[in-house]
Length: 183
Ligand code: ZN
Image (cartoon, rainbow, N blue to C red):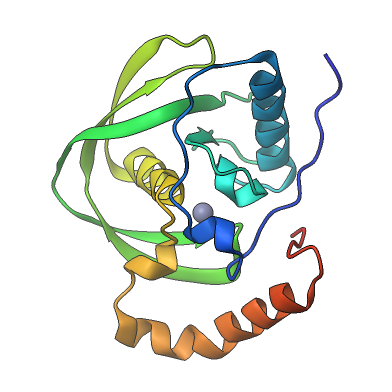
């Protein structure tokens, strides 16, 4: 199999980030290669999660490695294909950022406890329970598959001071012919 490729990250203002992604029916070799590229790109860009729409492919897949940091040798990526949050309860306030919304960090209200059902790369049906931070990462990534960005979850009043910056980012994408920018 070819070496993993670094994929360009789409940023806010790009239509693909507002699009509801398509479910996966067949885990082909091509798709597996894409998942490798997605994972490679997440680590290269210092992300703890990356969803397929963030690299311009509107399919229901994300990868995450919540406890990874650049200093870590150990990488434990979890790939979720067609994830579905089937149980949710409690509340937590999370400080979030996003590779597709560079330099913006905001507090978001999330469920605390969740149960998620998904397929792994082998196509096996899996279930995972999560709370606190891991649950936050899953909810953030799952939102990407539904065309939702974390800034959409923020109270509109809180978003006002961020607007000039977000507008600027949108202008940057509009000017860019390819509508992409690598962070
Ligand atoms: Zn994100």
